[in-house]
Length: 175
Image (cartoon, rainbow, N blue to C red; front, side, top):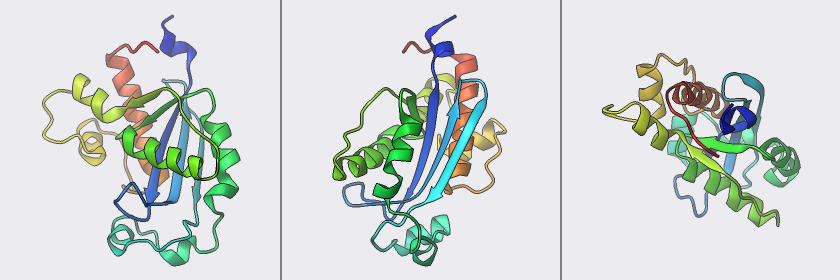
């Protein structure tokens, strides 16, 4: 049994108000818990970012200012999210973005966040070499992974989970 078989993964995707990581806020979060072979549980919620969503983000995600206006704020959800992340390897497709946004929002409410991370973009480049693009939609199509609503948090997190499972079938990681 290698180290992977003893660990749980938390696959996270966030949708945000804009493209600049320094001042963007979360509008939706999707979380999938996996043992590396199968999905154990899922969590999804819209988040009131307390700021306007850029028009191009609404066009991409179909998340509107009206949809999030009466949703809980991040600080109302932080304890639940932190519990879901606790003691798991944080995985995302472009982990620096998703982890960075979450880390900053946790820091803003005085709850520092750190831990082990795995990027499925970097891992996929090592395992599935030679693709023209490693965007989630492109690699999902290449590997025949279902991705119904790209740029929606839970659907992207699910697709990333299936990608992680395929990566782990091909490669061994030591945590």
